[in-house]
Amino acid sequence: MDWISNLPNILLCQILSNLSTKDSVRTSALSKRWTHLWMDVPALELDSSKFPDDNEFWGFFDNFLEFSQGLGIKRFDLVYNVDEHIQEDFVERIDDVVKRGVCHLSILNELDVEEELVRMPLSLYSCRTLVSLNLYCVVFDAPGLALLSLPRLKTMHLEALKYDGKWLLGAFISRCKVLEELTIVTDHGDGLEVVLVGSKSLKIFKLKSMRSEETEEECDPTILIDAPKLEFMSIFDYHSKKFIIDNIGPFAKVDIDLTFKVEDVDSFGAMFIDFLTKLSTVREMIISARTLEVIHDYYEWELLPQFANMSHLHASFPETSWKLLLTFLGCCPNLQSLDLEFDSFPEPEEIKLSFVPQCFQSSLQFVGLKTPIRVEGTLSEMKLPILFLRNCKVMKKLMLNESFKNVIKKIRAIPKMSPQFQTVALSNI
Image (cartoon, rainbow, N blue to C red):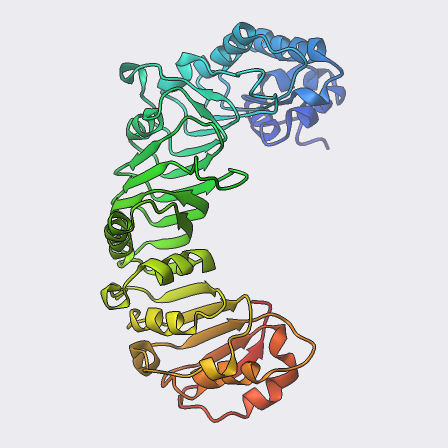
């Protein structure tokens, strides 16, 4: 019995909305009832490169819009790469989609933006139904503050856009009153100088740079963050003059890969002190070797803030940074879990405790060590785990990567300070 065909059209269209438009159209061959059913699906997924030519693409698009007049479009995904871009025609069609109550909109432009600037309809900036927005390589216009209003937008991903105004993005973010997740990918020539991430609702913020190389003339925009409910922040491969945190959630998780263009050491030092102080309330931190080098080069250790809330730290350490590691751990008195990656083995004579961090005495339970894999074992391969096993009083588990496999038996035989210790194990950390 074909029980699916016995379902009402509204349920069938809901099922088809979970398929790609290509697969949805294929169902028209099943029977007469299915012939035009795909046109009633409130979702459209198009990739212009999958059509023989521009005429076929635009013809399909127009037929869908014509036959589905009066139908809401809840989801619209477009990969756009045509031979001839006509801005007026493009805007007219996207405007039609937006005005049909679109909830989830994704437009990925693959045209050469230096040659063809792809702009969005002004209706997009005041769409009252939009819940998620994903834009790639298009122009972000400045329609005027009076027109900016996206009252239902919760998720926004903006990558390699060109902004018509250096303050435009900050103003746009501030008008998204229920925004919860924001991803910004900056690019060369995007027109941004300062990005104010001011949001009382934002929970997740991801920032990445696509600039091919750092130059003296150009760096990434200055970032100012005022997001009191922020739970997670990821900064990847970012190079800026300033990064200012005014407010984030008190127990946030952060992933930091950030370097700075330093023009004035004194003013940079004050800004960086404030940056680390505002991060001192975080619960979990992942920090790159490059960011730790900035701390090493410009920060005065006696001024390093206490990260009293931090329970988990994942740190990648550059060469000759053993002292930096101990100092940083000394600022995490309640640390429970620690994952360390080294890009090279510390020298054996460096691996010693000039002081015992507070977390070694009272809280550190889980340690993971990842070092470069070598064919032959070294003295460092023993001294690293020895340091933790002989000094951590409440440690339960030590996880090691494959570089320790030749000495794992010796490591397991090392006397442990912690009476609660359970195991030493190899893992793909």
